[in-house]
Length: 560
Image (tube, rainbow, N blue to C red; front, side):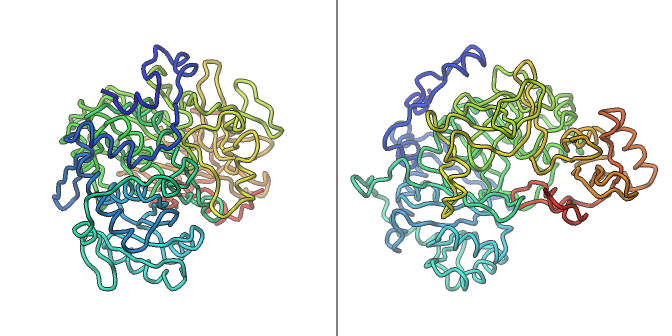
């Protein structure tokens, strides 16, 4: 048990969070490559070990061992090399949740090419921007009319792209991934010397959500998968040979967090439901039917599942529920525990790294708290002058000691942007520009993005606290709290709540007053939303994060 994990972690069992924080470490070898040292190594030592269980809405059900993934990735690596794709090239993938993504990602590691995951929601402009920023050589797309049409339109503006490859079927003018799988030889020899990958080569590139301008291309080296040992083993608490499900599209960084790297290092079996649309009741049914052991989904999905009759589903096989992507409101985890007997363990991080703060096994989750820091990341809360703040004070979340202890899993820079790279990770610490505070027990609580904090009548108001108060009311499914100009022209900016209502509720002046009074009772009275707007859905990035900046912009608020 834990065969691969023990190769990189001198110690994997700990008695307390303090023991974990003081003694956990990862030994990074000089030539680590996920394709060879995880996928192929599991295939060598346990040929029948199950790697992936994949289902979709059409009734298709596929299961893959590590031997299957190893052989299929060899075939794709050989076929891609025959096309002219080589070490150092960049491949953009738009594959939804298709099983082929795991094969492609493993093959790219073996070739030494960089993979750029992207979501199916991208437009022509988005695809061209990514292709040109990352100097993409090939694009691999799921056989979807919208995705392929947008890609073809983007190719006219993307001169570096030489190949377009379609997955799950054939398309005129496209190379068939299925045929490449059939035709590629199964034998592949790990390159040596100059042809071998180096630890600092770029393995993976994520484009950020773009909540504050153009998306940046976040570069991760071949060390990156090792950083997700903490994510998978100690936050999601995956178990070897058991099913773990993270709900995410392959185009998001959360896929790397929850569906491949740390999970396979730990020997867990990844479970994937390739849903066409999120239907809460259907997801709950899948969670029940497949004997999952661990589960992770964004807070929004928990909120919508709580609109269903959760008690009628048997989720007892799941020993750990986790969440990340947006802050988790305390009311959600309290209600989830009421129905399932288990609290949701929140984790916090960015596309730029692994789980940075989380509710680890020895940390009793406090509703509304993100938990405690990843011991590899040396996290501190700093003020504008770079000084550490006291307990109870707000500060920017920063990863320190970059010069002496650069954590495995943290990004190494932004593609073709040396100025932004130097600004972000060229100094002693990396500032995430997310605000938080720490209590006397060492728990961290999220306040908001630095740009999202509301300044009103001399007060600084964190949107998350007001949002948490609102979603505790049964009428509210989700909401976004932002600054908006005072309609009365007295205060400058005031607090606004943009709200999606639960089933059975309709907008009214009476409901608005009820929600305002509810916030006054739940938190400090001055924080209540003086302006309330009801919408069918909130504006979100392709990564699912709420676009508070867009709401502010539409209301005429200028960011400082």
